Image (cartoon, rainbow, N blue to C red; front, side):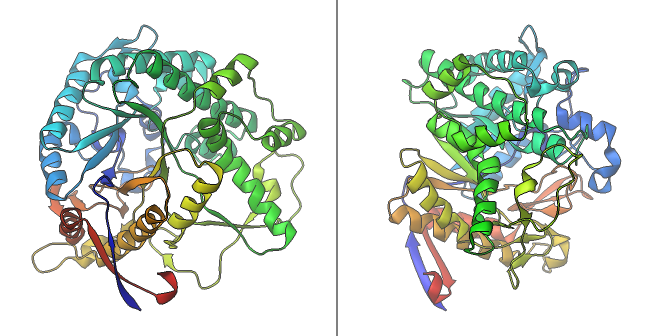
Length: 478
């Protein structure tokens, strides 16, 4: 073991992220402004941990000034969140803005800028309006793409003077994978055709937003339009060809399905052929492919938490079920792996470096940053000291190790722009609600959502001020 120090460049982001629906709560929400997450919670409250969902969340809509002050105290240089599409509009077809909600966004952004923290804004973080899901099947419909572009046009016109870095989606693959591939979330329908149609329309919507952004002159004004993806660093069980094929196809269906069209402008030909081979029906035309080709994103945020390991399948596939990419792979658990037992996830900080190598190899012209990385722990109250502060040294170590690999990759020439933590405060997440805590700041559900900085908040503030990371590493990891 050796002590290591590594410099943090002056322009390197040290931020954190959350979303509108996970923080704001429903206060002031009008009838008809439910999002997909709101609808799911109302239909299936019992599947959310202790029945806690987005209704109150962290009440950020009322307490943003307090929280922005805590961001400043914790040393954040940037904060990424979303505008809740379902709440920003009163009429999704006519694109009529809800001035009450829009004014809240104005005030929140003003407070961020006053405190010297740069806002980074997503236009959809699972906040598809429930009306559009129930009326058109959500992203199944190309009409929803048009409505999304109209919504974005209103947002850009209002806030482009305050926000320079915009993102179309956060993790655009997640909702349809959970709903239409795995049937784990409302409305529970295994349908691979819909899965791929949602993928395509979100890719098309992103390209349309880049087109709008550039044509309206926001790019010339120093703005950028990116996307936040969650490609998993995928390792094969072994070097054997059958295991390598399993990892290759997993990567194709879950990573390259978004990375290639959004960053390079084209779908992987092998993916198109496999979808055809398995009879997956999704609709697109040459004009849409041309827009995707001409308007790649300007930057990409990458959410990284754990590696994904796969092996060749050993079981026979049920021919009566719809095609699922798992036809080609099975999960593999590495014996002796380091684990976050609260979350059930492997801890392997080197995934950050391996992702950087992939970006250098496959997408060398694309600037990128770690948009989410963090450690969720259950029942953190057991780590409180006599003064009531959570002693989350495990989180400090986790952040330090992952940040080290980002900085090492940057030193070696990777176009890595920064590191953002999930999350700034504890917040509600799908189904798990507040079961696993991720924040630098504790949210006390028993004490009127009282905010209490954890030990990690003071550590992060010192890190941000010193612009130097010091940690202890195994000699083989340096």
